[in-house]
Length: 269
Image 1 (spheres, rainbow, N blue to C red):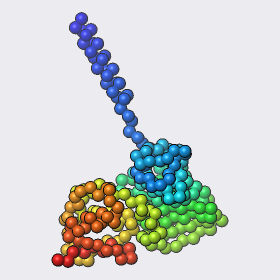
Image 2 (cartoon, helix red, strand yellow):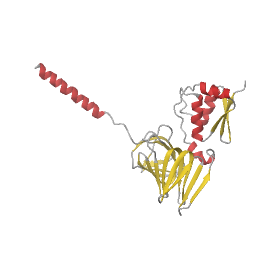
Image 3 (cartoon, rainbow, N blue to C red):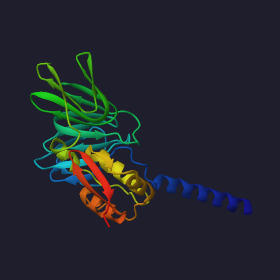
Image 4 (cartoon, rainbow, N blue to C red):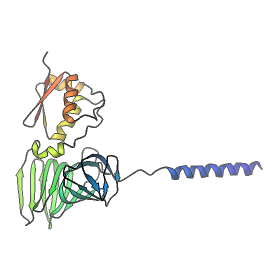
């Protein structure tokens, strides 16, 4: 009798473990919506921050509609207004109209490929924008390198360069600035991460990379302050400009922007 009771108890425990295991949701390996501004749709459904998207879904942004997504590969994807894009897989996009911006950051694993009617773009650890319309494909790089493949030909594009492939197959290259109005839609989707406990230098480096700026410390003492001062508090509800105006004065520093340079100096006493 004692043996039967023990066996029954064991069966009950095993059954409970199986039920609990089956009730645990599997981790999501799709795309996660981080931010939505305006009209962004997945088919007939309105997209919202926090939504999860599976491969194969198509997204469309209306006038003024923009979104930021995180990819399973660790990349960040920003989608401009009036864009049609299909999330073909964890590391593949099909862009038929509009513009997207990809940032591989430091956590990305597999490279992302963007397929367009004019050719495919393969990234090599970078920040870049891809724009498609009825006349051409345009690729602009802030950082790193991409390869544009069309009809068996490979075109390498580096930081500070723009490559345009026309509907007629013509290819044009031009130098570009890494900051300013041409990137305004991209910069407008920057979302502050949790930087609590990081150094002011880390904060400035992150900020500069997001906007294509170059950091200029007026002297070595200013740089030392940035290295040794720690950011405290939650900045995630602030815009980048608000974060700069909030963080730097607490470090005894202030800043100004001069033609793409983020100039940092000590506050006068």
